[in-house]
Length: 420
Image (tube, rainbow, N blue to C red):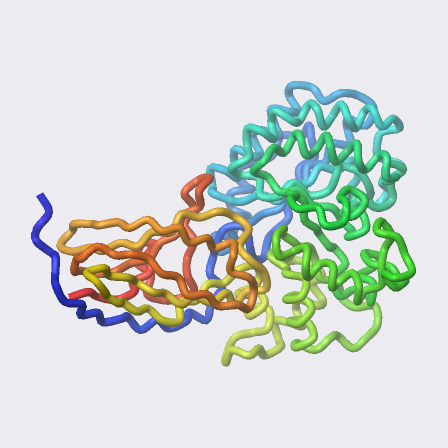
């Protein structure tokens, strides 16, 4: 039986919710490393284990299937790919997954001669992808092009793209995001004002030129069709609106023309694009410059500041307890200071703990509604109890913990204050 911890009067002492000026390792966001796998070679998983970084919950797995350019994949190859995804699941990594026939920038030479062979490979991989939906964050690209980046391929016509999209979407199911290289490719696959989609973008030419190395076009939107490439200003406006609902990430590239963009210009661009994830090793020239550039946070490099704001970053600004008509409410003001929203669904719980006894209060709050740079006030009824008040968030699909950007975390729970 629970002890009598009920009180008629609210006496709440909030904790000092100081923001932690560090990268908070949260799911589906942040810097990532690329790991290459050349099927049917068996990976050295022991060596791979030592390459994983604890501070990076996100990885990219590039799976090279060029050895099957002109034949179906054999059971051994499919088993190895399953082992790779099992390995990352074991180490609780969210995976950006990309299949490619080419790792040398020669997509036309290395991809299958027949489109039907690409279709067969996707169909073969479909059950495997379905079995790992809790691990795969994004299935990036549609298998074709140099480096799998959807350029330098004979299979990029609207007809081919739509067939590939249908196959890959079916393989991914309803819990895995997809991503294409260019906004124009996204528009080729979607009608204007399409209400729902699981497809985002990836840009491996961020900052490399005005057009992000061909990601964008040159013509004003008013002079082009929906499926065409638009000028940078129009494309960035399109991305700003689209990526409120779908994830976006990729690689930054050393600009072709010097000098490098200023820190304020970079932050404005990444925030406008709603960037959630970036390669931590490319372009090293630009990233090394960021590591030696000061940031708005004292003593913190610009590189680490960018890393701290990739994706979502949730800060609790105030916590209040109010009581009226014998109903007690907890009001929490929360701000998303990151570049992007949170795209995954979380269960958010308030807990009152007293002498080892726990009272949990489930909420209906949805972190996905908190856009980048905005603040919301959340309210929830609390039981008439005393003790230490905590806030926690766990991802619905697998129970992964989301950490708020504060230094008073206790086993993944944020201490909000004491009710006496």
